[in-house]
Image 1: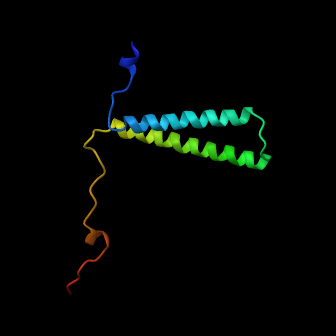
Image 2: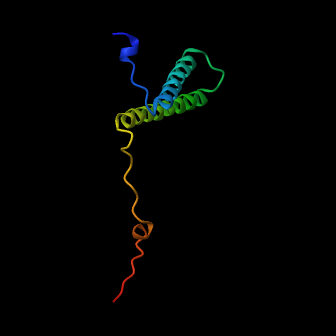
Image 3: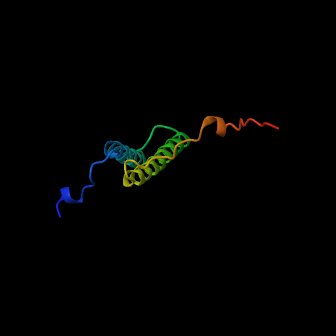
Length: 96
């Protein structure tokens, strides 16, 4: 099989999914680089920076999974319509 045959079909989320994957790759590279180089910052600052990068990577991976799930759904299959605002607010008229 060629790369063209194994590549996913373009859909409405292709561009966003590619961007999220690039951000994940960048974040992993940044974390690896920071771990491998001596740093002039204090140990606490460095640990906090790595913790934030790791948290960002986890969020980006969760977004990637959500985009993949959303891309698998048909285009017309969206969220259900909201109910009428008067019904949702509970403003019923009672006539007793």
